[in-house]
Amino acid sequence: MYRGREGQWAFLLHRLSGLAILAYLLIHVISISLFMFGENAYMTVHRLYDFWLFRIGLVLIVAGVVYHAFNGLRIIVMDFTGTGVAYQRQMWYGVLAISVLAALYTAVRLYPRLVGGY
Amino acid sequence: MPETYPAPANAAEGVAMMRVNVKILRFDPEKDRKAHWETYPVEAQAGDRVLDVINHVKWYLDPSLTFRRSCGHGICGSDAMLINGRNRLACKTLLRDVAKDGGTITVEPIRGLKVEKDLLVDMEPFFDSYRAIMPYFINESPPPPAERLQSPEQADRMAHSSNCILCACCTTSCPIFWVNGSYLGPASIVQAHRFIFDSRDQATPQRLNIMNQNTGVWRCRTAYNCTEACPRDIPITTIIEEVKRAVMYQQA
Ligand code: FES
Image (cartoon, rainbow over all chains, first blue to last red; front, side, top):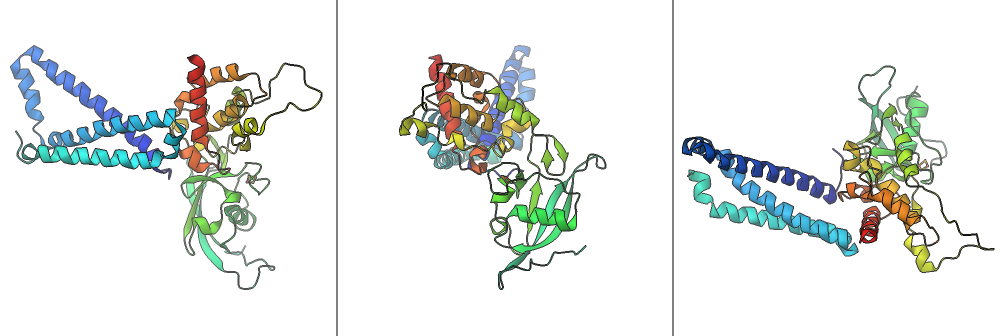
């Protein structure tokens, strides 16, 4: 692994979170559209989402969306201003902090569901 | 052949020596299918440069080791290597900055270019990208009797980008370049910047068009590896962002 610094990890996380959001959106659209085939088809798939991995995935997807959104703002600031480039590192730590906070908040709000399922 | 080479006779008394294991990624196209690590124990001074250590390996331990170097003083740009996981010039990296006594340093060829042998890579694709940005002064107006004058401010605009020595540390540290060799890469953009922001040059629109192509400046995803790697301390990301803005405002 190349030993890059903050910028490299910011870029990698941005890619990964973007792909995760895309995958989430596709699964979301497909599984909801299953209702076209009736309630049974819809429910068989949706019962799967009670699996613990999917429940934890909810927290991760919130973190991913928040990270992608705020890092996107960071990129805009960098693209349009020289100060943005100068402070990219600090901004990235800010983005990370916001993402972690958002994930924690989600975890707290979803706590019953996370431990007990639906 | 001695396992480790004794200190040179003129080494000052009392200069602290350190032992390091130099781990080099070797590849011989005539023998090997895959690159493999080879470790050489070396005794050297803390103030030696990594280039000295590699020279030592070649001269006294394994003459088949292949790498480029020429000036030895950070000017010619031939000895860019991946040292301890980061791109650096071997001749500008002090041993004490990358290794502790008894420690190990790793040396690999720079990434994204074809390895010809050991640390020597095919630089041709890199120079093709360099040529693609028309790296020469273009001004069709008749030359004045003396110099074409610039104000100090105008000279400052291109001061950083004209420091580039084309060592490829930046381009081969770029994650985008690793997966997409057609990206012109940070070095070419820095070179383009040097002419785009040269007040005397007249080919700015052409160069901005080259930068606007899909192999150009928009491939940059601001990973900053180039800026961290540059042995000339060129603020590469800043420069790339300036070119991005110049392309964008030209379109507007
Ligand atoms: S040998 Fe010339 S730059 Fe290192």
